[in-house]
Image (cartoon, rainbow, N blue to C red; front, side, top):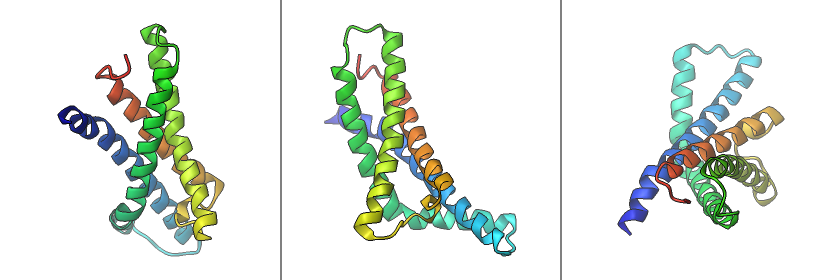
Amino acid sequence: MKNLTRRAISHFFPSWAVGFLLASVFHSISVLLGLVQIGVQLNTSNWLYMIWQDALGLLPTYGAIIAVVLLLAFLITHFIVKQLNPHETEGANRSTRFALFALAGGLSFLLMLLAMQPVLNVTLIAGARSTVGLVAQCFAGVCAGIIYSQLSDSWGDDQ
């Protein structure tokens, strides 16, 4: 149990934090750019304040949802990595892990965002309402997967 707690803190938490913070910042920038396009004057202080407030406001809901989808994605990906040829060379295994965890992060964000629309009849994350915004949100998931792959591999979890 002690090892599981250590791994959760040292592997999962940083990857979740990167994914959530990037997704929140991308969302905020998308909304702020929309305001600028309609003529709202915003200075740097306004931008930073809005980005900070969005992160705080999204944390209890979007942050929790991101934690759940990343946890599921990474657990499934660990299973897949272990089922792949266990006799691969270490270099091939690392590149496979990297690709699979990056894909899992991005795909989990995509599925999460696509599932919100039919369930809630609205895209809650305004920054994901455009194609560019959706890609940016998925990129946040890819980054979370990359961070997780690198941190969990440094301990030799799947070797």
